[in-house]
Amino acid sequence: MKKVGVAILGLGVVGGGTYKMLTEHREFYKKNHSIDIVVESVLERNTERAISLGVEKSVIAESIEDICNNSDVDIVVEVMGGIEPAKTFVLAALNAGKSVVTSNKELFCKFWHELEKVAKLNGCGLFYEATCVGGVPVIRTLLDNLQGNKITSIMGIINGTTNYILTKMTDCGVSYNEVLKEAQSLGYAEADPTADVEGYDAVYKLSILSSLSFHTKVPFTKIYREGITDIDSDDLRYGKQLGYILKLLAIGKNTDSGIEVRVHPAFIKSTHPLAGVNDSYNAVYITGDCVENIMLYGRGAGAMPTASAIVGDVIYCATHSDFNYSTFNNTENADPTTNFIADFSGAYYMRLKAQDKAGVLSKVTSVLSKHNISVAQVIQESGRADGTVPIMLVTHETYENDIWKAVNEINSDGGFATVSAVIRVCG
Ligand code: HSE
Image 1: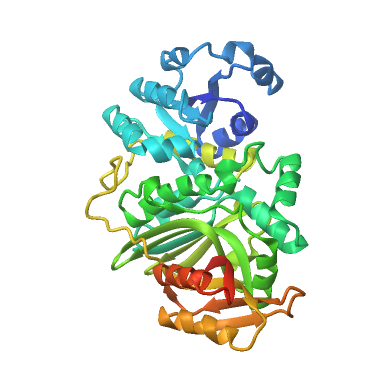
Image 2: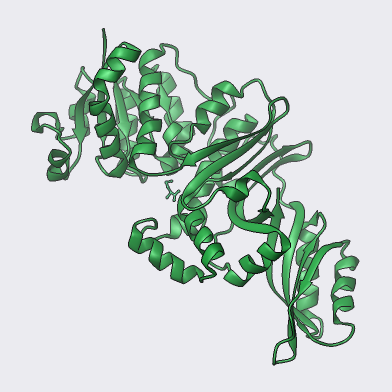
């Protein structure tokens, strides 16, 4: 039976899950895949943590060099996160002829071109299913199952922390800060939540997913990013009344005029399949020219779901002799022939605080119509004691630049109304 040696760099949450899965399922893989996968080495500074997971002392490596020089190690699993020392370790492993499986989205997104070049040079495999959406098998779906399609759009809820926060804000009507505190105490959000709540985590994942979907390099720097920290729970309530649910969406579109890539909060129709993706669950909604729409749904994070993606890659690597690399020109920067669209088109939700006087609504709509913006839906609450009234409207499809021109004009034009919130409406 073929024996495959694995080394795991980092025994944190995901590394621990990977160790558990590989050791507990060893006989299952022998029986069903005819390979004996053995964890030959782990690199973990916290020896107590390693021992508590059942790792024998003899398996704990002193350094990355130990692993690179260990001829029993065929595949190195990098689950350390961050750029350094992960990058140095991955390059050392590839240069030592080991294939690499990684869950490190930031490293992969920023240095994919460099890692892939070294992998190719050494004839090694480089696998990254676990970089995007944890246990949801989106990378291999794009690479293998959907490869006959021209993918026109990919739209996803690809960050569990923000989806948990927005779900709680929507269901309980509580503020962002209150839910964040609760999410942190439950371990759903990090002590420093910036990467999740400001959309960076989703941007790294979208960079990888849109590059694979559209067969051109989409550097993360080309992706428009906006987080959820300014979302007011009032808007979630008004959105519900208008038939929408708010999500942090990652959107990639491939159109005749170019590629559009963005991560931002957006309302989607409550009947859209993504609207039912709640709590820390993730989903990716992909549109191909032949397959039409498909949605992949599941756990986007966590020890065992992410280990599932990693071990899938380990088995794939162990059972394939020809390694595939990206089919597009994978460089640090975008291909100069790729046009990135900045002026998005779509519908927009606006909340206005207007003077409760005759003619104010018509003043608002006349500014909008001056910028070719047509109103599709409108609701108004009863007037407030200060003589103002909240007006919420959703436009027909329009251009982002026109929306901001109209917003600036309303906000600077004599105080008949102030635009308090603008939220894109997608899907
Ligand atoms: N922090 C991420 C999330 C999981 O909340 O989805 C790993 O990417």
